[in-house]
View 1 (cartoon, rainbow, N blue to C red):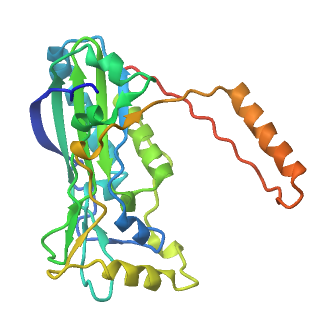
View 2: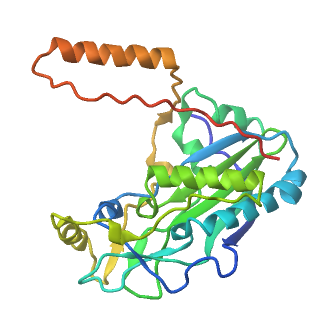
View 3: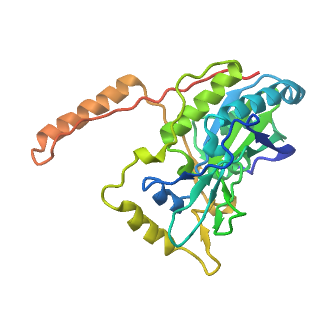
Length: 293
């Protein structure tokens, strides 16, 4: 197995949303859709980009733009800039408490040759990705002065070769579609900071109606996880040494192959009369290879 990537921390800081753009006193309650995700560890996606510039250019040009565009994005997706808190652990679920900042760090990788290996489609040692992913604490306390951050960002530059943006976020802050919109909005602001966003996220939880009392059921399961000191461990992050002999590979599938699989599934369903044919949805993943400079 390959050795871990060696990175040097250049800066660790916090990125703030623009002044007076994030609600300071309001709380965003979790719904019964969110509560089950308290048991899961943070999601940790990595994005790789070609970057034919030296570290000096990264520090003087790219980093200020990334920070500024991220700041603008947080004013629209403000739960990411908040913390998860418990107001009354005996009667209510945790809630989003908006705050104006997130953790942000940037690193320089010692070996530029590592970029093509780790960003390729071939099998790669899972432990290699560990140094590119930001950490995100997962302990939740009933102390009102404590809370769990919901998003952390780490940017690693491979001088003259590439760039990796790693994120860690708790699923209670956003589902897959919301996170996808967050990334797209960040990318749009990075291209044009004066961009006007017409469609903004809605965080009015009153539109979610719990007709079957699922919140109470999920909360009861969540309370069983509480410790002696009213401490709840959300799904924790796994350390690098917890991935023995594991690899990750990327499989690229074109539209023709996807259509072939779809036809095969439909044919198999028709052959087995006991199988009820339902609507079949096939997704096509497109790689957005934007330029960062």
